[in-house]
Length: 206
Image 1 (spheres, rainbow, N blue to C red):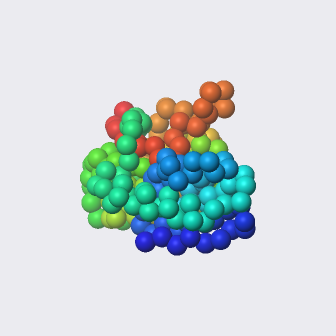
Image 2: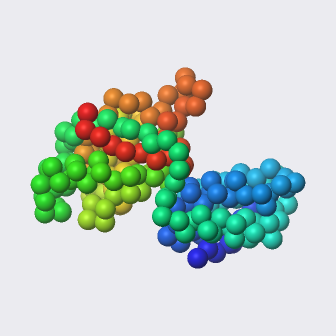
């Protein structure tokens, strides 16, 4: 189910298979196996969790922490905690093309996007840019062949099985379904990023 790869004497890379990396990272943080161990940091990626320690990483403790997490990983509930609601104006420039490509109506695309429970697996690309899984497979579309040079902040988009909200204006090749007025990244807040690994998210029509 998991492969643990050495990453120097103070880190290890856990390949997660089909498990949400952010979920595994949260469960590993909670494991009592780390009691008395030097501080450990969990960094989830698309399919992996990088585990870094301030001291030598005890592989035996890591494997014990994974074994402790297994029962929770096998449960039906993918995550716990509050759900962040993101209001969306579904008027994106790619919405019609997405519906045509998958052979359905615009309303069906919106329904699928709003009915799914999205989980932030990891963040990257730009500060506050959260990669969210949860889309039905029939909406797993490739990025645009020709990326845009400018995507407005707040754009709600899908690509390669992920959903995302652009935290700021930037180039991008994702399919734009709509836009939100919600600020998902604000450096003046105590916690600048609204969506962090493990967050549960639901999109709803604004």
